[in-house]
Length: 121
Image (tube, rainbow, N blue to C red):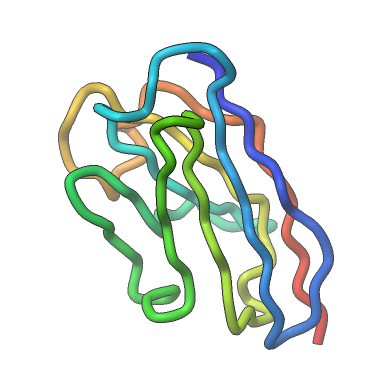
């Protein structure tokens, strides 16, 4: 399963940006959990959101970010609003076919290549 993340870029603080994650022509996302993680320079990769039977968010993005999926398009979206400079990072999507805690990156089998989000002040 090959994932691809799209949509990163430069945005001013307070602005919005949408990311998408797709698996072109492969296993539908209707079953696995799909998570979004991010990694800022010098920091560990951290969980920010996931969608499975419901949606789940890290406290740092709750109320600002929204994750959604379109099974017909095999695509998962991450809408990011009210962005802050501390949201600057490389954002990754990942698929979890194994189960286990969805906040734990070790439970994700497949990863996209990452897309850079830069939030300027």
